[in-house]
Amino acid sequence: MYRIAVLGDYDSIYGFAALGLNTFPVSTHEEAGEMLRRLAGGKYGIIYITEALAAELEHEIEKYKEQVIPAIIQIPGVSGNTGAGVVSVKKSVEQAVGSDILFS
Amino acid sequence: MASKQITPTRMELTKTKRKLVTARRGHKLLKDKRDELMRQFLELVKENMALRQKVEAGIQSANKNFVIAKAGMDEATLNTALMAPKQEVNLEVDQRNVMSVNIPVFDTKTRTADANDIYSYGFAFTSSDLDGAVKSLADILPDMLKLAETEKACQLMAAEIEKTRRRVNALEHVTIPEAQETIKYITMKLDENERSSQIRLMKVKDMMLEEAHRYSERA
Image (cartoon, rainbow over all chains, first blue to last red; front, side):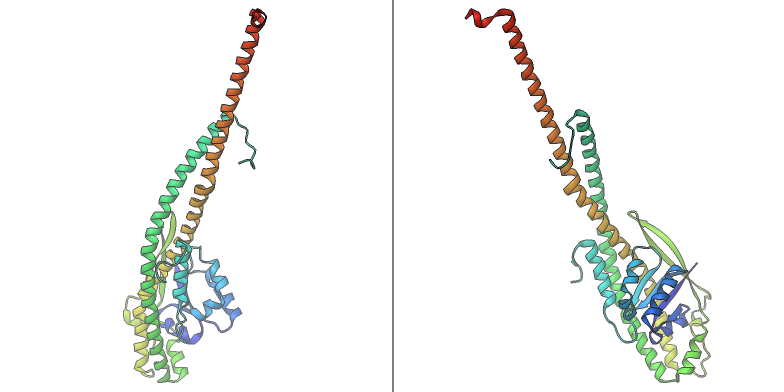
């Protein structure tokens, strides 16, 4: 049985706790990397991560891209939408097709 | 071709011919796999994009609601209200095989069936804005799960398509032409050998006839 984790700064994610997801507020870059590794190795099937944090941990996230579990999904934080989530979708199109023919 | 040492024998020829047949069949199969994967991927990625836009818009408006809710009450109250969640979401992970790519299928189970268990607080000290904020987030949750599923599937399929495409290209542009070239080279060499032994035999025959009948002396 897996759980769902939400990783990000406190202001962006505290609401998810009410829904029954596990929230992990982090403030520093190092803390976030450490936490992500722990969550990915543990019992979490989906990890939602704020776009701002994902930008800093791009290298770490890349490692889990080819694994079935966990799915690391970017969500916009409270400070606004950076468009990084959409960019990552476009990136997978580019990887598959060779160039972005759908959403350019 | 000259870069590789090939012994031009009949055995090598048979071996290379067999290799070519296998390569051709593998190429065709991989090409079919790539095409089918691509078709499914394009469908999935469109869905992924639509879901993502919907989820991002949903979370954004939920965040706005939370900011308003936070403004209406003091921080300590808000923290206490959300500290001990009543609801719990468990995730069941299954795997589905699409063209030899394992993609996850997520199924969630909430600890309690009551939809109102997302409100983990008494209503006395919190503003009604918080209720609305939590509700708006709860509404977007099913879409978020679907997004996780499709986005992960897209990532996995993209990686597989890339790999398959590489293999197809390697077979098409390296392995198959190389085998064809080798076959051509060996056939030519064998033909050449055959012609040269034929000529040698004819020459020997001429010499033996000359020996027996002495044509040159009679003329």
